[in-house]
Image (cartoon, rainbow, N blue to C red; front, side):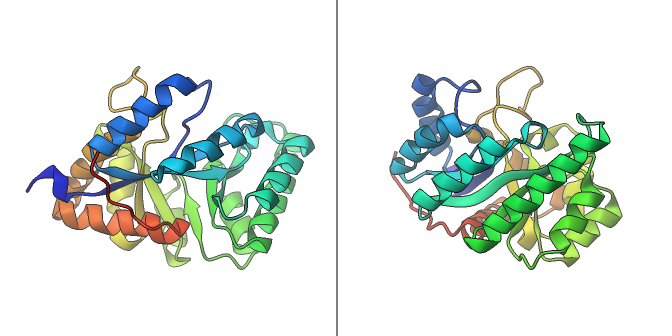
Length: 262
C-alpha cells in the first residue's frame, strides 16, 4: 500500500515559540503534510501567542486549542483565555490542555489552586460547548473525579499514564486517550496502547516532546511512523487504524478533513 493512501492526524502538539521559531513552523507544517498528516491540533498555553496560533489556522491543516499549563495557573491567564475564546469561538476547537500536575507541584495549597482553575476552565468549556484536553500527570485519580462531576462527553486524556483501572474508568466513561510518538520505544505507552479500544484512540506528538529519538525535537510528521508502529503492535491493518484514529480526531474536535496535494 502506498503511503499516499494513508491520512494521519496529530491530536496534540505545541507549534509556537519558544518550542519552534515562527520562521521554522511553516517548514514543520509542510513536512507534516508531505507525510499525509492533514490534521494538526496546536495547543497553545501562552496567551501571548494565541493570535499567532489563530493565524496558522488559515492553512486548513492546523487547528487551534487554547489552555493553561497546570503548573502555571493564574487569574490573568484565565481572563485572557476567556476573552480570546469569546472573540474567536468558531476558530478554537477545544479548551486544553488543562488539568492537574502533581509530579511537579507538591505543595497542597498550590494543588488546591490547580483544582480551582481546572474546574473553572471545565465550566467555561461546558458553557461554550467545547471539548476538553486533559493534562493529569501523577494526578490521574483526582482529574478523573473532577471531570466526572460534570456532564461532559468530549474528553481527551492527553498522554495518559494512569493505572489499568484508571484506563478502564476513562474508557468506560467514553472518553478518548492519546498515545505519543515515543510509544515507538517506550514500553509503558505500548502497554497503555494495548488497553485502548480503537474507537477511543488518538495519536499525538506533543511536539516538541516525545520524539522518536531521545534528544531530538519532535514534529507532527512523526505521527506517520508511530501510527504504523501502533498498528503493528495491535496486529491490525495500518490504513484501518489510521482511518479510525484520524476520524476520531476529526469528530472530537469538529474538524472536516481536507485532502490536499502538497
